Each structure stands twice: as structure tokens, then as C-alpha cells.
Length: 538
Image (cartoon, rainbow, N blue to C red; front, side, top):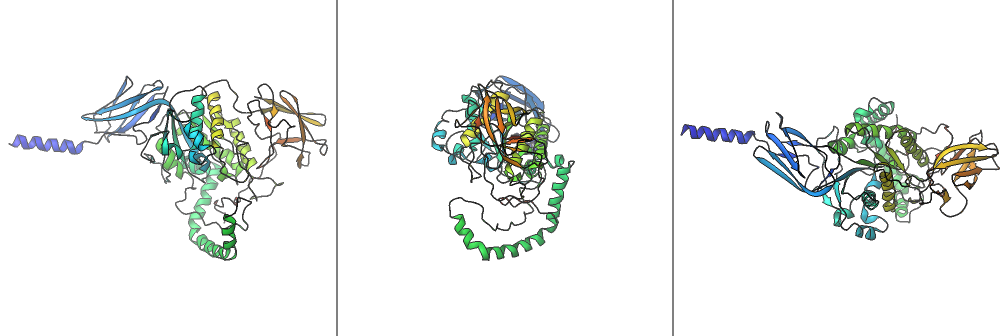
């Protein structure tokens, strides 16, 4: 009897000590695993037990540590599926079903990255084109956190097929990208992880540890620390100001909101100071929405963001570069491809600063272009022609995704194809004219409307830009001049928030905005009226 009781007690103790077998929460039935790379799978189990993984004829094993955690590396797998992943740990087992092996892309940024399929131009037609596509979707729930989180918060129950309500509510740019990659010749399963949040700053997506050693990071952190200390006083002052504004302009503001989209409403509604749990704070979206994914093997990143940083466009150049380097370090992939959607045309209205009538978006586009030129593996996609003059959320997202796919097919998959549009190679004076030599123009540079090129401006030594005439003089050359500035020393193209432009390659891909000068650009830290969210200095 004593032996029986002892056996029962030992069995109960063993059961109490046993840990449930778990796996990373972003994996599950229907997931896509990255092909061609070793795959590290992690989870928890009873301490000390052997953990064995089997999938598609491959097998790997490891041992659960004293705290129950385990991590096992599977060999690289070829594209295909569906497969089952079986995990055995002691007497416990777990099976993930319907897994595909292909390419996994992390899709992040602001609201334009999250703009859903159901709301794009031609939504019904494009959704119908997805029938049978081997595309799987995982949307990460929006979450802020003050420290890096170990596990993400998948939305809508985890991975889903690209169909029905799941597709209708998912990022249109991402789905269009995946479909164009597949139809462009890279016909493998594609997994899309959407992790974005509307109206957010770039620095919210950067690890705080990466920001702290930099001058920009210290200044940004200091501004938020000041806001934290002064929030009560500032909120009371805002309430008084807002009550006065509401009494004077509230009725007219409601009438304005009901009208077709026009210019900005003035005077602007006073902005409430950001809350202590604001998603704009440095690092908080990295902590909650990206850090938990860093165990995932990726093919690359799609990044569509910048609108909320447009009042600090020069600083954005440094922030975007820091985001790329910090993400590559965190994902343990120093060559991780990053495809950046350059901001399209948009009339920003009144500017936070007035510098020769310069709107902020052209400076931010310049920052995006500089990062792509300076950082290997960052590929900039021009989206001019796909914006809307007075809508910051343009509906032509399918074409944006298609252009991003061209960048991936050419630069990630090595397929010979046009993707960038014409790009300036050299600019030189030729008497009273500038000759712009371009590359990546295929059979020859052209204009989308068959008319002479528009959108060029030139400046003399006074640095005052005036409109210039232009003509295509060779397959790779454009002549630019202005009788008003016979001794021009600088030239720019499509340099405005809502610019004139018409230069394209034979595929219809537009030439990116550019400038020949390196004159200083404004380091504004004012508040763009559209956002009014950057904490003011004391």
C-alpha cells in the first residue's frame, strides 16, 4: 500500500512539474515559413525533455532548458506544401497543419500601409483576382509597450487564407505586392505579416536602445520627458483654449467637415497634449508589434511611412537609416531587404514653415531617396501618379503594390526588369542649358503625355528657383533651361509636395524627384497642422 501511495505521489509531482508544450504564438495552422533559410522554432516544454521537430521529411531536435524554454533549428526547406509540422516533447505532442514554405514579408508603417483591400479603387475586381492564390495573411494587433514583448498579439485568430473578409480587411499594398510577385514569375507561397498603426512617428518603430546613443534620439526623448512632466498643466491650458475655439468656430467646423474635401480648416483646432500611453512615443510600437516577431525568418520588409514625420523631414533621413540598421540587427540579417514606398503627390496645405513656398513632403521624399542611395539593400519605389491631391489616403493602392513588387523581383529575386523609373546619372552645364543624363530608361526616356517634360526648376547663385523649360534631346538626356536664369547653378525636378511631373520610362514608371544642389534644407520642428502631435518645447 505504501509503495502504491508513493507511486501516486510521484506521478502527481511529475504531472505538476510538467510544462504544457507551446510554440511561438505567430506560428499556427496555415502559416508560411521562409524557404531557403535555416528555421529556428522556439517554445516551451517540460524542463529537460527532448524536443523533436519533423516537417517535409526534415527532422531536428533539442532539449528544453531548466526554465522550460527550447529552440530548435530546422534545415532550410524548399518552397511548397501544404505540410504538417509535428513537435514531440516527452509525452506531449503538437501538430501544426496546412503549412506552406515560401517567402515571408513583414509589412509595416502607417495608415497607408494598412489601407484595406475593400476600400481601394477596383476592389471587387482585384479581390476576384486572388482566387486560388497561395497567399497567407497574419495581422498583428496594434499594441504599445514600454519594454520589448516576447510574444506578439495576432489579430483575427492567427493565419488565414487570402480570401473573404480576411482579404477584404487586410493591407491592399501588401496583397497587391504578393500577387504581382507571383504573377511576375516568382510563383511561390507568400506569407504577409501586417504590423502597422495609423498616424505614427518613425521613432515609435525604432528600439529605444538604438535611439538613446544618437543626437536625434536624445532630443526626441528629452521632448517627451518634458511633456510627461508638464502634461497636467498643458492639458488644462489646452482645455481652456479648446473651449474658446469650439465656441468661436465649432459650428463652422462641423459644416466644413460635411463638405467635399478642400483646403485645411483655419484656425486649426487646438491639439490636446499626447497622453502618457501615446503610440507616438519612442520605441513603443517596436516593443509591442515588431520585437515579438524577431524570431521570424523573413524574405524582406515593406515600409510605407513618413507622413507623420513630414514636419521633421531632414531628421527623417537619419531616423529611417537607424530603423533599417536596428531592424536588421534584431532580425539577425544584416542584408535584410527593405523596400520603401516613397510618398506620392499630396497638397499639404499650409506648411509648418515657409521657405520659398516649400512644402514638407518634397524634403521628406529627398530624405527617403538619400537613405536608399546610402544604405545597401534599401530600394526606393516612386509612387508619383498614384496619389490624390487632397486625400492623404489615395485609393490606387493596387498599383503601389505592383510597383513594390517590381523592386522585389528585380533586386531580391534577380529578375531583369525595369523597376525604378529613370534616375539621374549626371547633370552638367552646357552653355545656357543643363543636360541631365539619366539611367534605367530602357529604350529611351519619354513623357507620359507626349508633351515636353514639365516639373523642372532652376536657380542662380541667389538660390531662388524659377520654372524651367525642358526637352528630350537623346534617349538618355534631357536639356533644361530658363531665359530668366541664364547662369543657373542648380536644378531640381518634381520638387513640391504636389509636383508637376511627366517624365517616365517605356514602362510608364515615373522619374523620381531629385535636386543637383546640396544646399541646406530647413530643420523645422514645428507642428504640421494635419498632425499637431509633436510635443512643443518649453
